Amino acid sequence: MCRSLLWTTTGLLTLWAGSALAQAPAPALTPFSEATGPAPPPPWRAAGLPGGKVPLSSIRLAELDGRRVARLAAEGSYGTLVHDVVAWVPSPGATLAWRWRLDQPLAHADLRTREGDDAALKVCVLFDMPLSALPFGERTLLRMARAVSGEPLPAATLCYVWDTSLPAGTTLPNAWSRRVRWHVLDGPASPVGQWQAHQRNLRDDFLQAFGQESATVPPITALLIGADADNTGGRSLGYVGDLRLAP
Image (cartoon, rainbow, N blue to C red; front, top):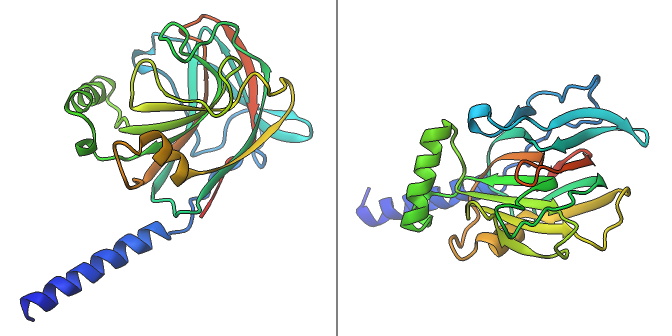
């Protein structure tokens, strides 16, 4: 085979592989609504901060308004439920949909500061962005964090949050690490104690949050829900329904 034909064939195979990955079916997330008992169904798993120095937030299933949902209660604590997925690149129209309800907000949360960096309700998407896309300093810090925690911490995490102090539509970096970006979906105008439904375009939201570092959307490796009050020492209560990915 001549060299030009080999290059052409290799290029076509590469394009085909990338297209197949991008158009792969959306991963199925195990629903809370079909589970029995208070324990979240596998592969959902609880995860806290490294070292276990901060108590875990209480995340269990409960019946509310005729449906089984996740109940998230934080009290000076930190906790998440993680659902790993096989690496999946979202297509341009791929969405993540869910509904949530906040019954008790955090009184002193302020995502702009380390002292106030707590979230009563968050839904996060973990992207496997290559380290080469990061500035050198952040790349070094992430490698250190991975070594200390023993976890493959992602280089890009987008967290949708319900926050009662910042207006809806606010996007900002986490006060502790720019590897996490907050996107406020429900703010002071959203009524407490009522369900709010959301459907987000994952590619658009990733590029809004991380577009200065990556022009392409990397694979998604996990999703999580969580509630934390370890920085403010406060107390919160909220609920999250089933999460659904669609291509």
